[in-house]
Length: 400
Image (cartoon, rainbow, N blue to C red; front, side, top):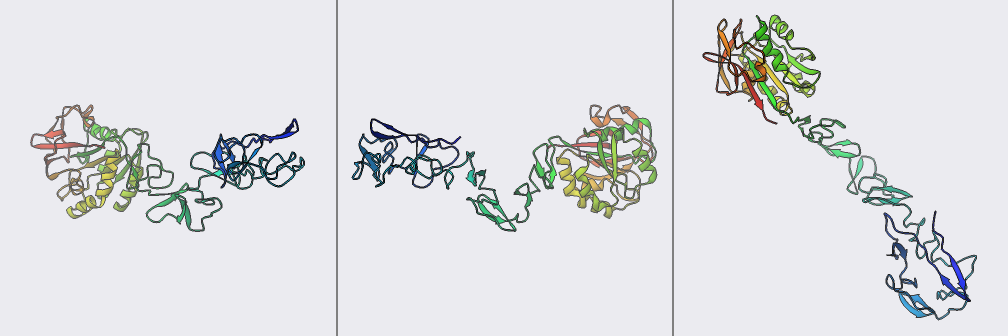
């Protein structure tokens, strides 16, 4: 309910009670001052003449901010010095709500008309944020034209590259944790890099020197254990078959474990794109490939694999067989493991040397290396399974 100013007569003299509105969430219009939470004209208000709280003595009026004797005051005009005779049916504009007079700050005619929060202004009886409102950009009524957006109170070109317009803001989707890789894609970790969410957990690189053309139960646990490092449910596994043998693919697939969804990258160029939705990336032993192709794959995937590991991904590469130097070259060319060569050790006895590693869980401490098995020339420190002459299974942990 709007306040109503009461006019009272007593003992033949007129007293004025000004009851203007309190100021909440806005400012007084030009020419008015806030006194005790109300907008007043200190040039003419006898209760705040020249300054808040400066009350004029009885019989004096406030003229130009000074308490003076009214040159034309009479018993019927209340001593306002306005040259007019008071008419109860048409009181002077000095306190009525909506008339722009003393005490109301011009409510309804350009002054305060709604209660707004910090950072907002009142436009057409609605609180708006002039920093981002395209219809009231910087001030009421300033509309941003086509192809522009309101940013920090100014109409700016709509999202200059490399930014994208998302929910009223221009954001860089390559590093925005709430729009990572696209509008509305939220990163639970709050970390976004190159348009991909980065998890707080560590990444893992596992190189296994078995092609799985032949297999046994104990050796099969290396596959399911490595995939199981990913803690999501279900586990999304992206696989690259390339030049692997059908037998190797079949045997490894049979041991991926329960709750694993398998997606095949039909060509190498799809891998960086598909990694965005993967938890595990698996490369079968590329027995039919060659050195130049394997090196090229590592270089082509290097950036995507580095980001994948930083958000907690698991990269698994199987090796063994083929006339080339080794499938391990993919990891070496990508900068993920340092390996310089391999040697076939099929039919020899392998030993688990780090039984506490997750990859080795349940694997027999000693087992036969089936065809085809290789050991690696490397300085990598985390060796899970070894041949007497070198590592067979390597597990590298990448800190987030």
